[in-house]
Image (tube, rainbow, N blue to C red; front, top):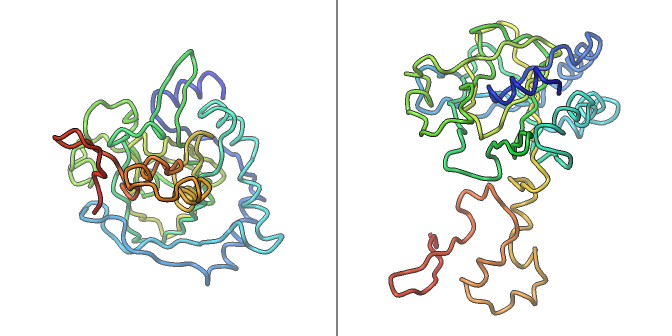
Length: 287
């Protein structure tokens, strides 16, 4: 990252790297997508209760890293592309890794938007943004490759710039877009651009897609080396998996809760401990 990019990233929480892909690379990737269009899966609407973001369910193309060669190569080349590596080294330091994804969004006209989410609520150190000793640091960065244009006010990735530094809870109207006070911005990008944004530290989502040409955006979800947000974390978090089974054998529920492996994005699915009025430790979320 140069000094201007570093300033923009620290200030706004997102960054657009222009013209990373050549016209030939864009054409090749789009041609492959066309041939695999029969694998597109349409999920539910991500607008939830929003009126502003309402629309049809979101189409996704799964398994692009698993396509047979050579069809997988253009997408695998995105994983450790120089334009990505050079910036992630500054954003979340060397040792970053792919935590989950890629998510390949292939929206058509009328596809619903996605309500704003993130903003570090509640505070989660594994994805929070900080700045210390002259260096920025964030635990989660999404890298979104654009295979077509995202024109102004026509839909696609949107965020609340600078919300990664907000000290207050996101108002309901900002979340739904039904009363966003003008703070939400849809990011303009061209085919071949790559958009970086602070995943979860910053309020982000998407506006409904309005263009006749479809939206094709490939989202890779990176994390710092010390952050274990999802993916395999859930599978290995159980004490019997993370430790030898004989280590945790016959432990109480409270002792066993301490022995879970790293799983930062657990959403309360692991036992959490509390202390009752009698001073006894107990599992606080057995339900």
